[in-house]
Image (cartoon, rainbow, N blue to C red):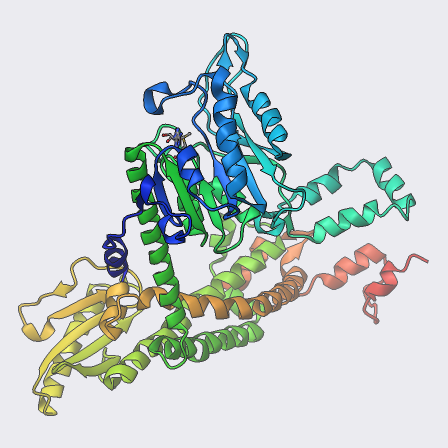
Length: 600
Ligand SMILES: C[S@@+](CC[C@H](N)C(=O)[O-])C[C@H]1O[C@@H](n2cnc3c(N)ncnc32)[C@H](O)[C@@H]1O
């Protein structure tokens, strides 16, 4: 599936690079979703007015990267940029935005003011300087300079043509995390009192509102690492940077322009977010790099789409997966939880105690009654759960075989399933994991395989009979288990191989996780609260019989589990109550907790 998708998309020979003289403003196909090769001044002049929703770019910095793509001297930079800015203003739609990622260079030991001049120049041109976002470079290189510290931020200047512009703030909301909680914690007592007394201030209410919210608006500081992966362009910015602004200022199918496209990061981000892009780049090699990056992104997006579609297909009513899905819920998960509840409700402290090794819990230094009870119940239940669940899942494997190949539950010793496929006859013994048996048990299984083969031949089965030991999880790198006696030879298929053998679907072993997880989420909450109640109830009982002076009485416990003959248990509650209350031992009425707590 994955390979097919790659073939389709990378096989596309569409040329994304557009020569300057072929750009025709009346034909959007000549510039939309293209990388125009040339100076952006000339290329912009060929684009129609008000055709772009967002411009996002990182221009060549003044003089700084002469070796790679030429530079403009800091003193000339403002004028050089402003001619282009005027064209950018023309092509931008009235409600569009322009994000300019730029940073002033240090010249002669001080920051050159060309960015500041540029802002003023753009304002004169009629741009509104709406905002300044800071890109905090989380991973900038450490270093030492005599008069300043490590540079770890850049400006992202936000310009508009008019005050009212498109902005989709919800699209960049961030999870609240524990911010509100820690804020509330930090409020001093006075703050709290003052806040409470100002009933009408609404501040206290506001904080509690925040506590309930899951998402918040971000600040104007973006904490992003610099691009490390893009080895072929010396000044690429991280894709998250344009992505964030694209989400904030555009909608699906809008047009995003990067007039200094470089390796095409903005174009890739736009494409991935379902927007149209226009990239302009003066260097052919960078245009080619950008083209490659875009095509790779398209291929990756296609892969994700295919995989989503694939997962959607799994839910199509009537498909095998839907049937499997329902079966797993109805015949595996539901009875599994029913059984768990049943076991839990029938659980008796004294029974569980007798089946668990008290020395183990002592060795684990468990000294609290509740911890002790929790441990014995949990380990008691889980030892049974493995078997219960294993049996139910085995039923699922048989069900698949029955649905696909008319398989059925076998009555032969050591064999759980029989089915015929492609003229072969299979006898399958199903186990939970791979380490299911010692050598005696394995040898017994092999004997039973032999007997089953002989029996089936007598019954008239003429096809090859394959014996399989199927394990529902795990792996076995050497599945062919040969024996001198060919009737004892078998295959051991585990995990993915087992489920694939059963269904001929290599993905089934993963897909099963989905319904199991979904249903467990629904049922487990109720189970956990029932379990908690049981633990409380049994802890109370345990304390009555197996604690003295507030501690676990281990001697009494091991006596109860292991001492020869009958051991009678005496509750200690009454004595405890009496000691606490100073009453007589022949108290008739049990103490009422409500009375005890009633201080009046
Ligand atoms: C800072 S880089 C942009 C990097 C880009 N943001 C990325 O992520 O790869 C500036 C790019 O502008 C290109 N450039 C310089 N002058 C140009 C011009 N007049 N017109 C178009 N592109 C130009 C350079 O070749 C360089 O690739």
